[in-house]
Image (cartoon, rainbow, N blue to C red; front, side):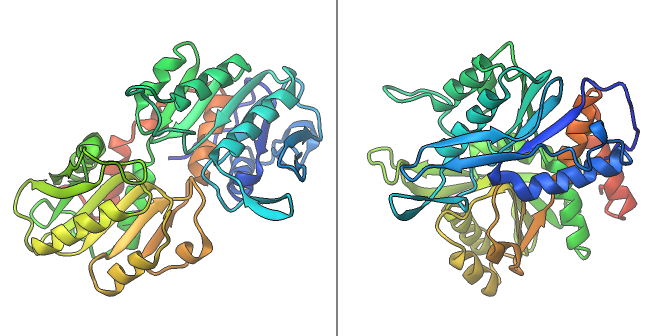
Length: 380
């Protein structure tokens, strides 16, 4: 799933601005692009990365300074709004940056560009305020407002991954909004790291942890040739705990799973409580090995319980991408496998800069089936 062609008919000289939250990922994307372009860099530079400085004042205010020209360039801004590891000193204490501050820095970059670039695109793997995408009663509509802000600032394209609700793009109908799924990369990593796994509908099943993840689970089950099961979250709507209605019970709908390996697929792992509840339910039903695959793994309440579940043999492995910050202790854990998306994002940038359709990258059914056949995991 790569394109090694060197098409000189680009939209404009390529430039990448990787904010502090995306420095590591940005560096790997740059390396991949240099391999694709065979060293054909603009203005005789040794990198596609544009040098910037993110300044923080002691009262928490900030600014972004671009340290080289961007005139006429096709600029891609990379930002991980979920990277809480970025810190700065404010009023004498260390403050961790949150999504609001990261999003503000995106707007600062666009402001610093000042209309000089030929095109400005934002690659925001984790969509800012993606879970605040629709209004129920008197509440804010953060995601839609954020997209409209970027549009009003002159951003032409938004690239994001596995957004909580793709319908939020209706807030900006005249702006290009590309919602991409990392299914191919996750399946590839899963197959390579679990050589003994049998992807056979008589031995394995795909599970959706809730009704909202059914479309994702259906896609996984269709390309892997597996049956599908669903857990329905029965909630107590009479109270709210930490902003959510607490789950009373997980009701299972699907075939008997006794002795079968299970692949639980979801968009994100936050605290992990839903995953833990489902794993317990699966073990009650005497399931075999349990694997979890998620686009984003945040571990908002730490990883101790994941470690405990792994040591107890309740979870075999967790797969997630590096599209948002992964703490070093998670990356090194035996129960976790990181799915690197740098090469894929480099491909996306290369295609768009060359005015090519992204269909070969986003329509992955054929590629996944070909991959499975090559690795002896053909659909049964």
